Image (tube, rainbow, N blue to C red; front, side, top):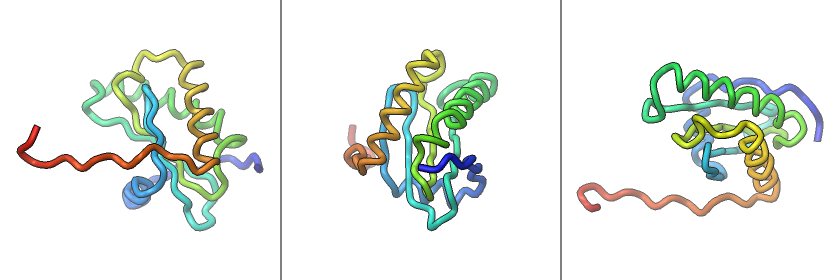
Length: 126
């Protein structure tokens, strides 16, 4: 694989499109990946308001950005969009542990092995 610098995904439509690709869940994050028709390695980060206040979310995004800058040039898939979605348990998770989890997740993506599709929630039933 080449070591090109990944670019940032900024359009909402690209984030939504990645949701239809492969999905790999880890304790601290969910990784989505989808081919992007020759646009190179791209990444995006999402941390919802469910995770914490603005300070916590921004800290998590900075940590994710460092993880992706370190991992994607060598381990990321060429011409794919990579989206990291923050989870509550990723706030105080050890950085080295998250780096190992990202390496394993990227290796699974390279093999084409994603997690099984999520079940749709039905309204009114619990």
